[in-house]
Length: 345
Image (cartoon, rainbow, N blue to C red):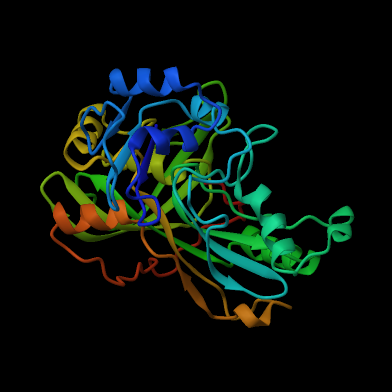
C-alpha cells in the first residue's frame, strides 16, 4: 500500500488523470476498477475518477508494492514531483537527502526507480559527474530505508567519500535517530533483544534470549509525547538489524502505527479511515557524526536533520496535540553495545 499527499503543483486535475500519470503503464480499466472497489481512495472515501484533487488531499493505493512497481516501470517518482529528493547536504564526497515515503533506496529488480538509480542522473545533470566516471565508480546510498520509511539517506559521491562514510557507519560512529508514531506508551530506556531473519517471510523474529541464528538488537527509546492510543517516540538505532525498529517495538507491545507487517490490523484500519494514513509512521530524522571523521573532516561533530513528512506532522498536531522537540536519548553509564553493524532498517 502507498499513501500520496497531493502537492500544489499536482492540484487542480481530475484524480483519474493523476492516477493515469502515476500508474503510467496501467490500463484505464484497471484504474477505474481499483477506484470502484475502493482499492484506491481519496481522503478515505470512494472516488469515481471525476473528482478534482487539491493540495493536501490524500490518495491511498491499497495495492501491493509489486503491483505499483509493475505499473510504474520507468516512471519518475510521482507525477509532477521533483525528479530528485530534497538534498540536505552535499559536498565533493558525500550527499545526504530526505527520501520521501514510497521511493525505494535500492532497486528490488531491474528497472525499479530508487535513490540508487536517481543519484547518478542527478549528479550528471548538475555537472558533478562525467559519464565516463561510472566505469570505475558508481555513487550510491550507504544506508537503507524501507520503501515507506522516510528520511535521511547517506550517499557516497566519490570513491573516498563512499569508503570513509561506509567505515563510519559500519563502525557505529554515526548516531542514527528516528521519529516514530507508535501504539501504546513504552518506558524510556535502552532495550535489548535478539532477532532472527525469516527470509521466506521477509520478517524479523524477535526473542528476549539468544537462539540459533539470532543476533543482538539494541534500541534506545525516548517518549516525546503520549495521548490516547499513540505515542511520539525518538528511537536510536544502536545496532542496525533489518526491520529493527519495527520488529523491536512490536515485540515490546508498541508497534509502529500503520505498519502492515508488524503492526496492529485494528489500529491500522482506524488510522486509514480517520487519518488517511496507509504506511508505517517511521522517519529517519537525524544523524550525528563523531568528532573524528577521518578524511571527511567537514562532517566532524555535525548533526543533520530531515524535515518530517506532512502526513506525520498532521497526525502529531491533530491526534497527539503536540509539537515534537529535541529530546536527547542518553545512554546508560558504562553501557557497551559491542561489535559493529551494517545498518539496514
